[in-house]
Every structure is written in structure tokens, then in C-alpha cells.
Image (cartoon, rainbow, N blue to C red; front, side):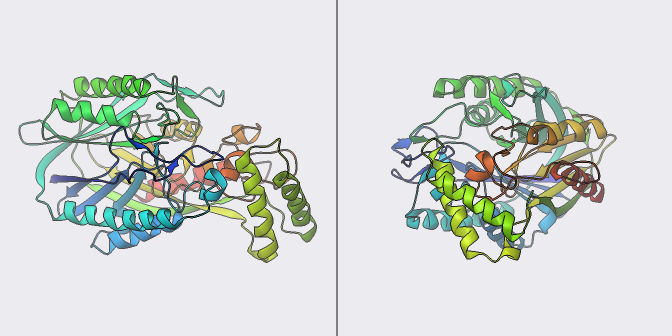
Length: 444
């Protein structure tokens, strides 16, 4: 019933291209490459129906870039619900025209080379999917297992720590792994701030799997890592330590097949509209503008927040009141693979924090029943829980200095307001997001 085909393509920019991932006041320009960056594609066929997942070694795709790629891929005859675009979220990858705002985050003003590279990447990913789809597929079986890794910690001091290492294995007729999709919920920042391109800890993990089984293809997908970091970071030695640990764990465990999945595969794709905490009255917007104007000249705040404040002041001055952003759209997608015990793969956009995964897993048979993925399709910002919105934290994007003003993560992602926290009789970002996740899972 199942068959699989795979492909990859090098997407490493040239020396001198700016690196994405950390807010800086002087662009990090690449001096070389520690490990090549790739876009990887796995297509699982359920009969004649292709289910396509692409992962690229970039920080993330924003809405325009994602929509361009999705339109081009669906033009190849792939149904929209059967295509997923994910980012590894490496912090030593290329700047894109969208993502963290290039001016706000990196003080980049000339975006000519960034625009050229981003357009090339859209075309290259489309070509990768077309070539992978045209390649002969190999009949396979599918099995699934959840392993464990322990190098993540919750950087927001919440009790949730990601340990899951989900593995979906496509095996040829002799039982040998032909393709492995695997994930983990830790920010790919083990390498720290560098001036060379690198895919972080997923790379040595992939190399360990593919090195053990020649002809096997491995692809990493990032879990709910919005509040999760490796417990050591700052060097390529840390990258190798964590990646080799992860890869060795997978190699040893999947030598024996896990739980069989027999199909069918069903899919659903939709969006959720997440509410911002805004009040579109002239008085409130004027007060917000005044706060941004003061922040833009305040040397005590970070450079990216000053540049954000400058940009938001311009935004308010040039945008009609009713057209100011009141919510954030976010793609949500689900694949269900049947069997005696089914598997639900839930693909969420954004930098989703781990508390959401905890809730969804508890409702759906635990980690064996649902594989919770983030950084999928497009990344508009962090997606915080109510717990984080009660704290003045980076991932929460909350700032108590004035209602409606954005800071921290919402600033580096170029939003003018923070998310709405739920209260009595009012659904905030947490309640709206969870409700939509459940709907999309049910639809698949």
C-alpha cells in the first residue's frame, strides 16, 4: 500500500551572505560553512496519493514565502493538505526577506541579495519536490516508535521539558530502513552565534543514521521548542555531542521495527486566527505611538527593540486605524496514519511552546498517539500559553509598560501588539489555538 521516495538539494548561500537567528546591531556575514545547508523532501505514497514533507535548514518561513511555495507545489498536482513545509530553525542559516524582520533583527537595510536568495529558494524547493515526485518510488512498510533524549530544558522556568524523539520509519522489503522522519523539541542553538553556516545538532544525527544504513534517507523535524533549549550551547563540539547522542539513540532503537502503521493516510489543512490584545481607539493608538516613539530613542533597550519601535511608529503613521493588525493567522495541518493504533502527525505553524503539546498528547493517547510538530509552514512569531503571558518573558512577548505595546519576541517578529491572554468569558490565544488544533485533528 505504501511507497516512498526522497530527495535533497544544497541551499547553502555564498560567503558574505548574512546569517539569521540572533538579534544583532551589526549583521553577521558568513565567512564559510561548517556543514552544508539542505532542503530535504520525503514523499510517502498511500496508493497513488503523495504526502509530501519538505524540511529546509532555515530559521523559518513567513507567510508570503510559504504561500508562494505552497502555490507552486500544489501546481505540481499535490493537494494542499498533503504538502507540509517545515524549517529546522537553525540559528546559523540564511536571512530571508521574511522571518525575523531583517531591518529590526539584524539592522539590514539593503535587501537586494536577500530578495534574490529568497526567490531562488522558492524556486529550488519547488524543483526539489518536482524531482522527488518524478523519481521512482520504493514499496515500503511504515512503523513508528517514540524514543527519548534528555538534553533539552525549559528556558522559561516552566515545568514542561521535551524528551520525545518520535521516529517514523519506511522500510524496504528486507526490513532495512529506507527513510526515517524524526524529531526533537529543542531549539537548534547548540552551536551558538557563529559566522559560518551550520544546521546545528540535527546534522550529526542525520549523518549517524545515514552512515549506519547506506542508502537510507533521514529528515529532521523540530518539535514544540518555543520554550526549550539545549542544556549546553555555544560551540560546534556541543552540536556534535547532542547530534551524535540523538543519532546513536535512533540507530540502536529502529534496528527493530516499531508499531506497524497500515493506513490509510488522511490529511487536513486549515488556519487559526490568534487574537492580539489591541484597542483600536484613537486615544489608545496615540498612547501606543507615544510609547514607541520614546522607546525608539531609549539607549537602555536593545537595538532591535529601538528599530522595532521606529518601524511601529511609521506603521501607525501610515496605516488607517481600522487596518492595524488585530490578529495573527497561523497554519495548522494534520496527517493521520491508520493502523491497529493510529498515529496523528500534527503540524503547527509558529514557535509553539511545549505546554500546548502536553495538553494535546494527554487528550490523544500520549506520545504514541500524536506526534506534535512546530515550525511548520510559516512562523509568524512565538505562540505563548497563558502561563507565559502572565510573565514578562521573551517568549511571551508581554510588556507591562503600556497595554497593547509589543516587546521582546513580538518585537523581533515585527508585530505591533502582544497576544491576548484568556480571562473569564474571553478566549485568548491559548483557548483559540487549542480549539482549532482539535478541529483540524478531527477533520483528518
